Image 1 (cartoon, rainbow, N blue to C red):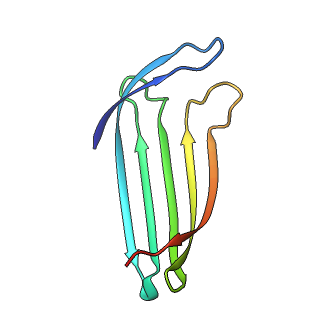
Image 2 (image 1 turned 45 degrees about the horizontal axis):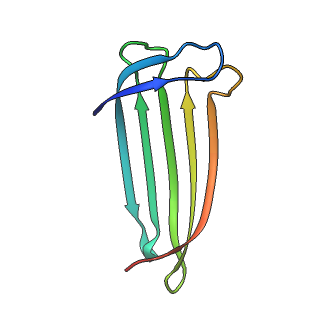
Length: 104
């Protein structure tokens, strides 16, 4: 658990907030046959001085060899902010793919 201080400051008429909270995280890694690696990371950051301003993140990814030292990776990242700026969504979803150099 990590203690954190976050300053939320948006352009416009929204007042800024100084938030004090902690980050609680969980990481999971599993190596399958043929050097395939599954990575799962999740975290939540509740705020002590404003319980309505919390955030959460979750990601899951797979790295796999394709040819010799060339690998392919795909990752899905979901981020949630309970108290976003006006006009913005509270949830964001990303899908990242890439080619990687598989180190020994």
